[in-house]
Amino acid sequence: MAITSVPGLKASIVVDSKDLQEYDDDEDEAAEPNNVTKYVEAISNATFEIRLCISPPFPHSTHDIQVYVYLDSNLRPSQPIYDVNVVNTEVLDRTPFATFNFRYRSRAALKVLCIIPRSPSPVSLEDKSVDELSIEEMRELLKRQRERDATARSIKQEPKRVCTQSSPKLFKDDELSIVEERPRKSHRTLN
Image 1 (spheres, rainbow, N blue to C red):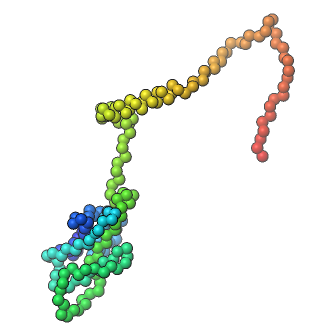
Image 2: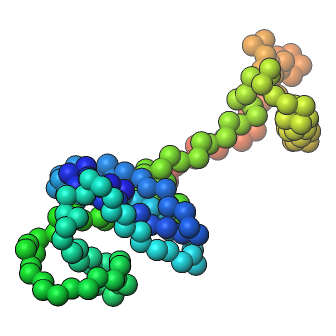
């Protein structure tokens, strides 16, 4: 990762001698010109290194540089970048001329944060065009269809009642006898 306002200065996170893929932080719009933030994928149980590269046209090449490393907001001791015999030192400026922020997250967390694209959802066989199906997919689709048909056949079908509009047949001589009279049922109401 480079800071455009400080040419010749790069920092990266290295695992197994390879720079980790860096992802932009889209929400970091108000970043200062000398401050850059990137996401990297955290790899479980991997040893990582921080690589700082200084090359021309780095503007501060005649000065000694002090580097601070913070991990989870805690200052960590760091090895010197290179040995320098210092005779006299003078602090020119205490404000950092560059700040690199690496946010490490698991691959799943990077997907949830929409830092990296999510895996596309597979298209169901039923939604695919027949021309796009492979032989194995066609067999699977046929198997599913047969199972659905077998399930539908195994469900007991109730006979449908047929109502006729013709007049009912009464007893001989068209007489009707009422044997008993019952009161109508009353419906209960909830209080």
